[in-house]
Amino acid sequence: MISSRDSEIPLFLHNAQSRLQDRASRSFSCYICGGETRPTVVQGAHTYFKCENCQSSQLNPIPSELELQEFYDRYHLSLELGGSYDGVESRMQADFPFKAQLAKRFAIGTVSGGHPKLLDVGCGKGYFLKEATRIGMKGSGIDLSRSAVKFAGEILGVDAHAGRIEKNVPSEWKNTFDVATFWAAIEHMRDPLAVLQAISQCLKPGGVLLCDTGLGAARWEGMLAGYNQWHDAPQHIFVFSREGLLSLLDRAGFEIIKTDTNSERNWIRGVVRSLRHALVCQTSFSIFRVLLGYAGFQAMQQTAKWPIGRLILVAARKRRNGA
Image 1 (cartoon, helix red, strand yellow):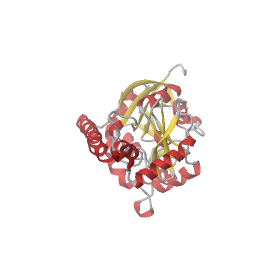
Image 2: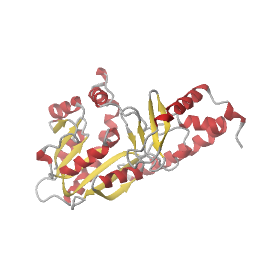
Image 3: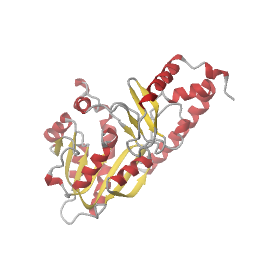
Image 4: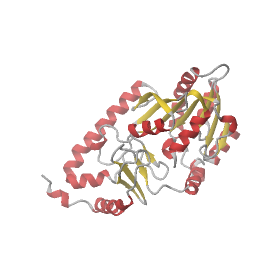
């Protein structure tokens, strides 16, 4: 039975619900699987559409290349100059020793001698490349942000290039790298399939790609009175479900080695993240479903952003036959 409170949705929730209804006419076929989509999250002028089939979400319309170039050039500047990266930099760097060792372990299976060769796509300011070099790997990176690449080369002294790998793979990179890393970057790409295909060109046959990103459609999130932190327009164009990400990797010529839908640098952090995620989702449902009623709760799911979310890590091998 629908509560009488369902007809008393707070004004800001009602307005957001109206905006979603207005934007429903933009519905389009899912980039990943071709399924039908529906608008689910409103962030100002930006709307995320979720696929009814694979459960992945994407922005529509997608920001232009110029808009993204300007955003990332500014993003990696210092806080004093209007950038944003400094606010998350220390947290990301804490993961890099674990991630560099992981990359090295996977590279050992393909390296024929000497230092394992690593390609870091979306290298940012180069801190991961620096760590990979420290433990004996030979790394190169590429990133859209010119300010980040300038820092990587001039301050950290690593081999970093500005540009879009999907536009033009350098000839010297083709079939060269033992392992490629794609840390928290695939969700930023306008055409992630093209980027994955370009990465595949850079890997040796049998080379390994390590990719992580925020997980969409995670367990318990249907109970959350809002949406997870990975919905972050305009920088996060996609929020991938497990099925959506694995499908995209398969289409790009990779075979899956390992999938972890609660990725952390150690098992204790993984347990804490999983328990916190489940507790917040269930508690928010218990409180806000009662307070707002069914319609109010649905409206809040479309408008309230929560600082939680799980990470998915995938290890995938380039198919040796190129199929």
